[in-house]
Length: 211
Image (tube, rainbow, N blue to C red; front, side):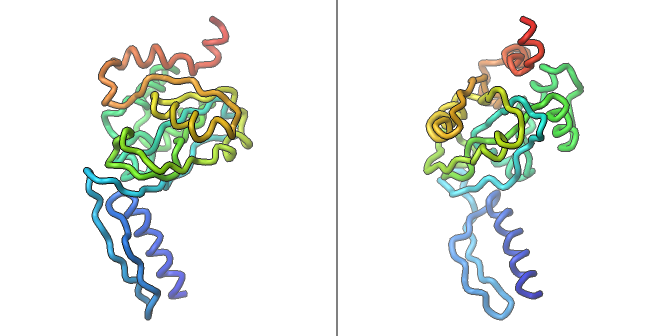
């Protein structure tokens, strides 16, 4: 019972450390204690980080949208596109002409209502803060979890980096091409919200089929 409690606490620390720090040394279990040496994350240095929350999909999902890897803010909130300036949720709401969701449950429901699956290309990597350009030593997510349990017709990338990483690490496995859409990140200042909504209209399969 005591060992189970200790392991539970350790797993909580591991999740927290994916956001705030890295564990550099773990001592043996001794008398009910685990000795951790913890190194705070420096936003200017590479840190090994893992994806710690699950993909969103169900058996009715027909399109899959892939990002690169969760930002620092998303890792803090343990949900996709957690940075308040990221326009992803506004774009999806604009494409399907629905209310902008506020809670995580509302965001999930909007995806389900429009047959959208959501995940990221990367399972773990070395990264500096939220900088996609700093990503190294990639281990890709196994998309079979989604593809084998849904009805995915098309795969889209949220930005060029996600597309390049998919093509490098995953396309040879899935045998499915990816369609690149402009990034919803606030760093993509070249696109206004209205332009993003217009370009991302491709994901509305019903509308696209009527063109």
